[in-house]
Length: 377
Image (tube, rainbow, N blue to C red):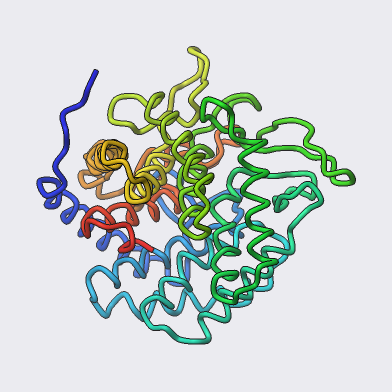
């Protein structure tokens, strides 16, 4: 069934009102939970997490503060955005994680684009060099699990290496990033555009062994947040590298998403759930995809494809801005976007607000309000 075309200007009042709600909820976090960096809510409340893997989430809330400052130029956001950002500076040397892009693109890069301060540039370059040290014989950056493990999530982080390569002219960095993207496309992106969460390799020979998962329903299923990471990540890899092959991969993943998502385009947390398993939304997958589709619409050249991806982004944002997902009518709820899923199998952040969902929702809103992708970077 074809959907009626959405007109961005008619949605701007809804987006503006929602951004006002974002500002109120962000101020609420600053007031109620000083020095706290959100990960996921428990019954709608922050600062009650059980198992907490903060290593990858610490850039998302300050990233929202930078987006609010960039969009409104309201000085109340500037000091906390800078304070939370500076807390991340030692992480530029962190070799234990694959998430440095999440940390530094959300924070240091936004501040650098606003101020041009040389020290911010140096931190970004060092973080990119540190991430590149995760390169393995199989031509990929290892996940935090170990040298045998490649995650689709790393497509959201490899851009930091491209950025550092572009800033310094270091071709060795560029080659590491290109190799990672190509290995990911070959081993984790399936012919129909679905994605595996993880690939397992023989670290001694570099041979790809098999698909695996930690968060998807099965190794062979398409975990929708992973697919969202691929849409966004391969689009960013194309933008930062200029390589057309990554744009084609991003389109294949996006077409799979648009083909399989339900009405309103917010997906279940996995596209291959059996009928007897609760079909829970993952609004964070929808938010990441909305932002990625906006970028993709600007990257492709064909006007029909541009419109298709832009309509997908607008449809997702219209759905996510509704009261079904934004808790305007639920004053007890402290997050921005309801119905996210962090880790279904562990029972963490299931049907809750999650920090990355809130962040990429705000990023997509800012892009749609400005009418261009750069507004969110």
